[in-house]
Length: 116
Length: 114
Image (cartoon, rainbow over all chains, first blue to last red; front, top):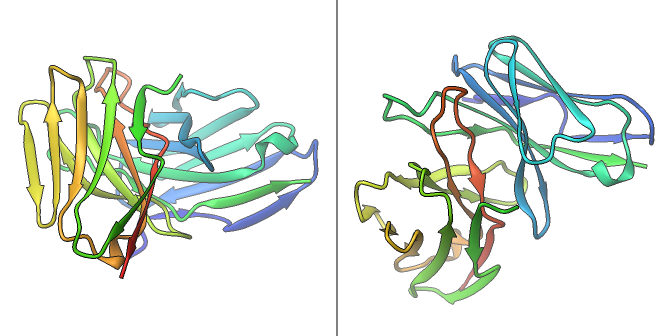
């Protein structure tokens, strides 16, 4: 029944490390997203992808990059982790909006990343 | 900047009461307005959504009211239950050639007391 799977629930990394967060969906969705969730700030979009090898910056892309080599997999990369990137990271996927009635975005359970 | 403004930040309602959460937006090009519900330790899940061509949508105890001229929409939870206690996010989106992404409000933490 699991539709969007994030590779880790909890991660602890050191400042300066390169960090990879992996997300896989099994619904053949074109769109995939990475959000971070912080108390009082809601969900903020980091990057999204509407097709393989395609990506768009969201509201807070600084310090992050993404990779989408296969339709089902979307990776978030922290090039050099910093303490202000300690957060909950949520991956989501969906069909495109246009022409379809089912526009629901499905979320993974999140990865709580702590950078020390 | 936050494209969707949500209020209140937190809400306490007695069992059986009505919970009301409000959202406002500026971009008139938005054409899809969903509400997501999130329980602790879980990712958000779609609760109900509306397109701007209708003013109201009801699904069970949950209703979205949409006011296009005021650029506002709200979630009403009738007969609120303790099981409704969760964080609620409104969102807005626009389709484009490069797909779409949801712009979320900051969330409302709802507590329904017995």
